[in-house]
Length: 387
Ligand code: UD1
Image 1 (tube, helix red, strand yellow):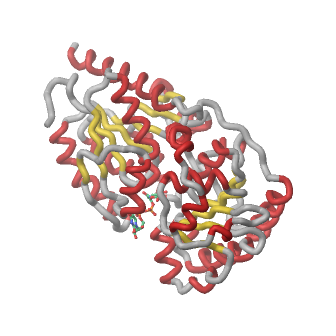
Image 2 (cartoon, rainbow, N blue to C red; image 1 turned 90 degrees about the horizontal axis):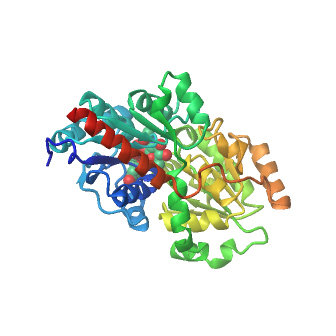
């Protein structure tokens, strides 16, 4: 598989979990389209593996099946990270890539970066430099450590530049390229599935969302929100109150679904105006978010997608690593504050809520910019290696 000629050594692109796919799909297409980079190989760690969390989204994004699947599955953070590393190392040995491209901040991102760094293979981190400054978040540790060992760091917003400089990253490694997530959003929005179809496929009547105020969309999966019985119970009871004002559509992450069951909290949401759905495909989520009156979430990507769509977003966290969605977009941080959540939703129902604008370079062309820049960088490395 590997070739000793630096020209032919492939670019290894790594994905592991759902939010990675929307970023990698446009990038892989753009890399191939340049005709100026070595072959692109897709490695899936298998961190996410369910049909709904994985396969369906690959199809929606028209992402080709991975060339390699490490099949690691779930585990504690340490076990999962260690397993990814152990299984990724022989893949590195087999392909001897010219670089490893990682996206975002999931365990797979850091695990594969660390292996690449031990093999002295250049690491390209896309969506670098975002910081929540909350080190209790596993993703924050993944971001800080990946950025420390990355050779090339593409950023989505200018705040990331300052964060990276503060952490001692050399300026010439940092490139402002825009947001790949928004490339996918713009490309696929015309194919979004209507909310009524999504609801009816999940067994809910169309009338569920035919409400004077429309409907809200809720997603919850952060450990801080769903792994603690008291925190989850409080959030669900706020949602129950909210659902008296407007119906809520809530696609459930498996972690959240299991915890609602495990903590005996199903009764809190039963019979309320809340439609609990299985995890949805990408086109279904675009349709739901695009038509929502408000989105409540603890996801990172959804804060960006709602800003791009101009839909008000209430983020159920104390901090965000994506401050531009607050400064320029439609996002507001609400933590767990029940009164603030109810009051802000009331305001949104009255006047549509916070207006925003789409941030700089979130224009649907980030992948092309990264691919062009990376092609030149790889060629430069190749010439250096041959000199
Ligand atoms: C991971 C990422 C998080 C990202 C999220 C998107 C880390 C540290 N976290 O969190 O940043 O926002 O993905 O979903 O990498 N499970 C399934 N089927 C699957 C995958 C997971 O049932 O296909 C269940 C398992 O019970 C598993 C749990 O979800 O234990 C958590 O999965 P895991 O990959 O550890 O983290 P996420 O919470 O999904």
